[in-house]
Amino acid sequence: MAFLIYRGQFVSIDVPDAAADSTAANGVNERGQIVGIYADADGNSHGFLTDGSTFTTLDCPGGFRTSPWAINAAGQIAGICDVPGQRRGFIANPIPKKKP
Image (tube, rainbow, N blue to C red; front, side, top):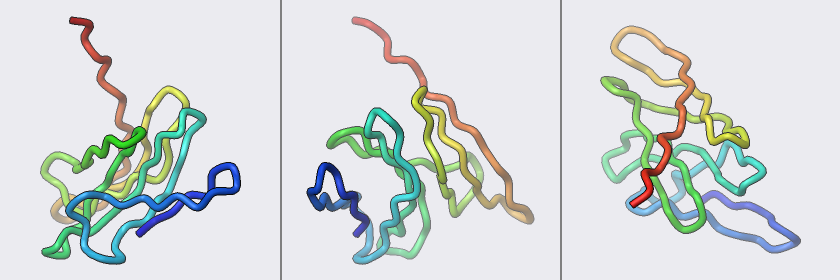
């Protein structure tokens, strides 16, 4: 379980489907979005983004052990991931929501 202290309150960050004691929060931005890593029940590492109560799993295409480290006010996420034979850095840009 990861946690955040916000306005003097202890807030736990529980990624759905994460194995016990496998979540780590790495970055938070001014909008309260949080990025970090977690392991699933099989021990595979994934990145996550939480925006309020919405959790999104972040995995590099073709990679494993995705580790987001920071998120800026625009929602861009920086981190690293392993692909077969190498470790790569990445910057992920948010996809704008389409208006109905």
